[in-house]
Image 1: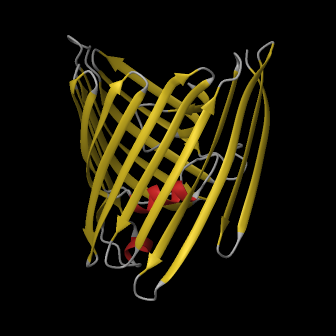
Image 2: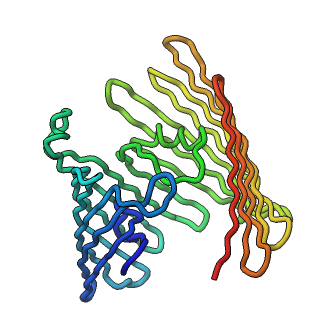
Image 3: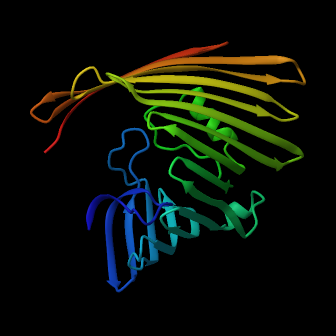
Length: 312
């Protein structure tokens, strides 16, 4: 395959512009690709960062509702011709009617310039594991460990809520969700992390109402608490989704976040509001619009996104 593509079985790679070749025999396949990463700002073609990858994939045929897959590979990237990152990765998943489990690990091979900054020759740079169990139709239990480094992801919007999740998502976690009716879902989870002499806990709870009234597609409420010896943070958010007519979806949301430093007694506050709209005009034309306003104790930020899309 040639052109812009997403390698579904190569999650560390994501999107690239280039060429990919794959050879398959039975449940096994092997392949390689070479390409460039899109421009960070415009998402257009860029030759700044090039990357090369080889991989081996195993995906046996599904049997009685059970599915499994495993992939191992290696990636080498260069920024403006200079060595950027070299790492190996492994990932696996297992799924049945009631179970789902997945795990991934990355192993970085650090070159001389990286070792000069204090890194070891080989580092376990990113690890993630999770499992989900559904003992009944309306109950789900989940748990896992997130050791991935905080990195900037491709997002349309960054808010105090996404910043909260990025900052406090690492650690072991355990959660559950219950659906007492087809229109109500209640969830809760706790996360624990220790390191650098700091022991931290994050607690979150959520409530979601779905299709409980005409033209109201969803109502979501969330509360998260973060406590450690060094800081305390509280986040409350909510949103409502509306479908006033066929082909139109509107969603409005907002929230507030407070972070307190117990040593100096200072509290930093941030709040945000947002409105999103997706409207079908007919003839495969769609209008997309988004507005959000974020304000804090020091500064404020407003963003407006408008788009016109046609599908073929």
